[in-house]
Image (cartoon, rainbow, N blue to C red; front, side, top):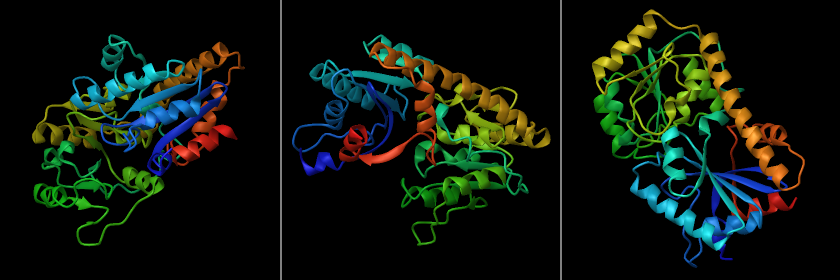
Length: 338
């Protein structure tokens, strides 16, 4: 095995040792999937890690339906599945339409939105003095459509250093001259990183959370807002972020700055009870996690092992951020051997 493939890192969760069950996040870039210079790809190596009767769960981070890039990725998954017929590939879908789309194409698929595994211990109600009318937690990429928030005068932006910070962040400054750029600017060296605890603090300082993309994955920020007890204003979207929405504290509006501003002002004037928002959201998450536990337990029973889906979930959720661990293929192999 080449050093390139051995040292390829991805976000994964070890779910079970008997049978070997591995979950991995995958986007349409090189997160979760890479073709290596020796002709192999990451899924081939992971199939060898889980071995015969093993299972690889793929959790998409971008909308599948109608995506040419995801169609290429699905072809790669199917090709590896044919090379390793005793390894079962499953796709945890973020939206119902994705389940139907994949089942029709011969994939094993089920509805299991990745926001099911958000960390409710970190993202919680933290009493704070409200400082912002709205917050938008979103990378600096044009598909996030920051310009739609231009009618919100007291807006906070929170973002990673990754993305098109060189070209897009200056445009956002021109769109939103009065916004508070919480992280600073990587272009002038003023950028600062926030851990998940600090992100939760800033969300709690805000009255409303924004989701403005037209298409992406399930958008972790959408569930983080709700777990912190603040309402959400979203545009219509593909990718599954609305699965945990509720009309009582989520407004889905047109791609129009006036409509977005009006919805934000509506929640400011008549704010929902934060405890109610969080409790309702946790109820939906708990129901989805129960389905996950039952699914994992069925795989274990079919392999002749004792069902331990609940223990697997508890272990997965013991990390600091969601269910994911970052590791190389070499480290993943060692994790299954111990």
